[in-house]
Image 1 (cartoon, rainbow, N blue to C red):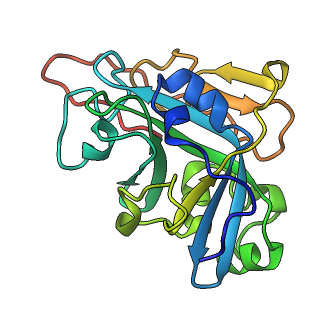
Image 2: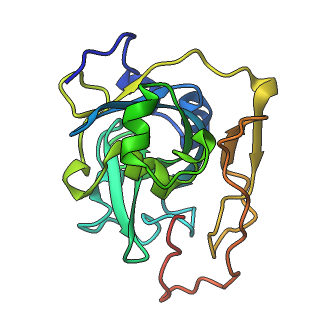
Length: 218
């Protein structure tokens, strides 16, 4: 494990509401130890998901074995498998017992580009290496074994290094990508002008009933 060159983000910065945490994570760097070496991406796009008041969240129906990390302490990875093909990763936030997480949607590679290219050989451009949550998780080598790891610990295989907060005038917000419920909620945050930001793709709108299933975070 490579020692972080800058301080890791403090758990207290993540133990608050999902919206300020989402904005704070922009400009932070996610580091992961992979078989090929250290990979690090500076976050340029994220999405916020909350608990019982957010029908697009995995935690909307309450705690389950799958979403338990979302209800735990802030600062842990919630990794899930989607579409039978990809892993996606979130960072938990809020106080323990309150569900919330921020999906890591896109980032700019700030580590050795050669290692990143080995891990993502099909990427056509550098901007595509971690563009979209599945590509980002793949580049960082995240899988089920990383669910629950503490990103605030220097001993963790995945760490979030604190970055300078992105100025408010450079942050844009809009609807989340691909969700079927709460599709107009503007809880996607991105750095204006960053080429790694993923294109907006609306989900198919549907009504969530009391007996229905919550939408899958995209």
